[in-house]
Length: 248
Ligand SMILES: [Zn+2]
Image 1 (cartoon, helix red, strand yellow):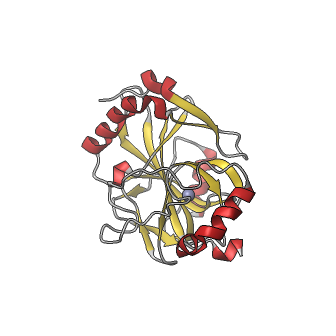
Image 2 (image 1 turned 90 degrees about the vertical axis):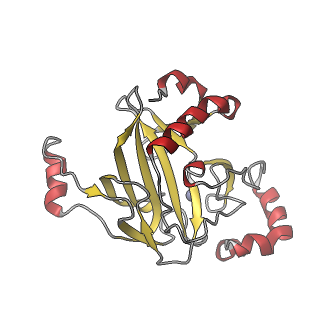
Image 3 (image 1 turned 60 degrees about the horizontal axis):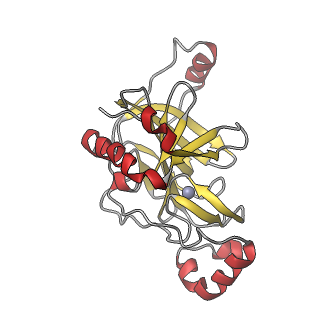
């Protein structure tokens, strides 16, 4: 078993969702050796499949798609912390759950677009952090609560309906809803350790899927002007990952 509480100090606070004013913690790269244990724990406990299916190339946009700082191409914000990874894909491609778990949410959010959140009660650290996975910017949602189940959720936590999700369940299709509109179709996969005291620690999903982590090429840009300059020189390359619709 692994504990995260001890190394909670080795995180940096990031403002998360502006609507809920939630603070999300992310691993501090200065203490990366501490986080190695967490990834080893996950690799021992899980064998996740790719949300796009394992035969599909795990293609990540090198300008914005990795976990960590990016220049946000829609919000046009420098040093925006990207809390997940973006798996580029043609629109409408099926999206599957990477791990088995319990459906926690399926619906719309301004930033996340149509998204699905799944908890993984089997993957809990010794000090009570449970793994959650989120799949964002979907076009269609293929799992959800019925009206009756939604009502039960609102009335009583005790009658909370548990919808089990097995690994490789079809949960939605690739889209560009939310803050991906006009950018390029992709699935944003986010992995969070959540504690019932409210602490959320987002970790890089890349190593869990066997993808090499990288620093985004826009991580160090300070202004929109710098991005536009980069866009001029790297336009073709950036447009291969398609932000064209938005930036032209
Ligand atoms: Zn993303």
